[in-house]
Image 1 (spheres, one colour):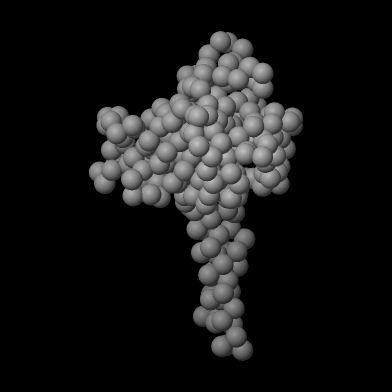
Image 2 (tube, one colour; image 1 turned 60 degrees about the horizontal axis):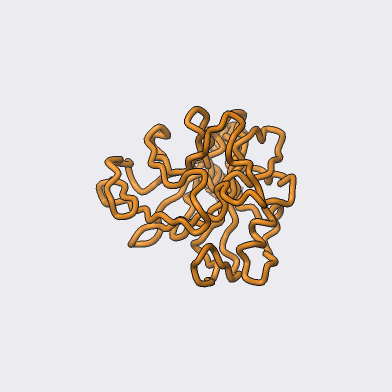
Length: 251
């Protein structure tokens, strides 16, 4: 029996597990820090765009009873900062959410050129139907579990980096840190827990770097959800603990 337990535990511990967390990615220019400075009340954001990245932003859920709000920060409407979100082929970008159970099941929320301060209200009802700005979209998700996407209509980048070519990271996330932000014409407010700044890079990032200034927005009342890979690692940890306890009793 003891040999069987040892064999089972050993096989679990060496079993390959898909990568769970994205690696930190290098932001290659100062445009994203300038964008964050521009919305910080004192003009100097405390977010370090390389060190403060949240690395498990694959899956999300609405965390507030009334839904989630998204606010555009930079979608390509400010040429003095950047014109990069209009691609070489003239296409703009569309940002939205996709059903975690079916990445082809999508709801658009923002588009290139939406001005700073533009907003949406997104809700997922008990039956999975998705409402935007209190109107039913006609799209139904399996449940309150989704990811974010950015597309030019031909190529799509996903918040779940496992779905991207070469498992490349195209979105980075920064958690609320208590700073006072002022976006568009809205009165200043705290960047609080449960709020996230998302910065997207549409071009190739397989080399581990990018500008991440193609689409920047604030999303509130959403929480990240542990991925199956995270739960698998947790399960392996429990197996290890159980095996250690068993071995102590036997010895």
